[in-house]
Image (tube, rainbow, N blue to C red; front, side):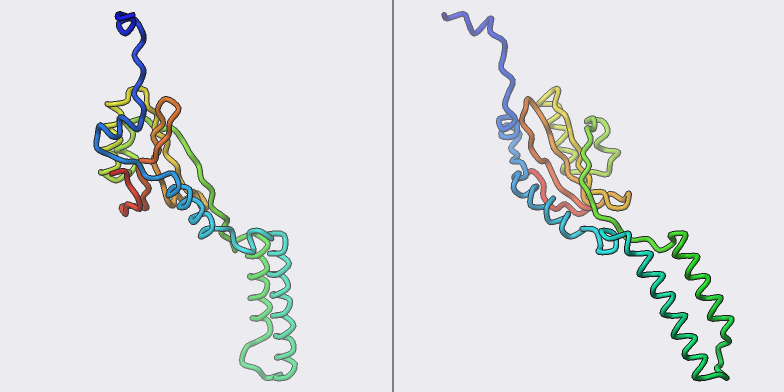
Length: 186
C-alpha cells in the first residue's frame, strides 16, 4: 500500500552506514584480534609465575648452596677477610626476604572490558582523534554503547582499545598505547 511507509517504524541505521556518512572506516576486526593475541604473547607470564610452587624451593636451594660454598671457602681460607658471622647474617636476611615474599614474579596480562559513557571519554586518556570520532558517532547513533578494553598486567593498564556497539553491531574505533595511536578509524 502506498501509505505503509508512514505508519511503519523507522529502521535504525546500520553502523556501517553511520560510519560511511561520517566518512570513517573502522579498524578491521582482524587487526584488533591480531593485536590482542600479539600483546598476550608478548606479556605472557614468566616461567616462575607459571611454576610458582617451585620458586621458594629454588630460592631456598640457592641460599643453601651459598651457605655451603661459604663454609667451604671459610674452611679452605681460615684467615679470610670476611668473617663467617657476616655471611650467616646475609643468608638469614635473604632467607627472611624469600619467606615473606619480597621477591615478586611478574604475572601474565589479561584483557578486561567495561562499558563507558560518551561523557567519560575525555577523562579516560583516550587520544583526541579517537575521542572526536567517538563523540560524533554518539550524536549520530543515539543509544550506542562504548566499550573500553584494557590489557592489564600486574594492575597496570598497558594497551587500551575502544569499541562502539550499536544495534547488535560492534566496531573498533582505535587502539593506542599512551599517546601513541596504534590503529584508528579514519
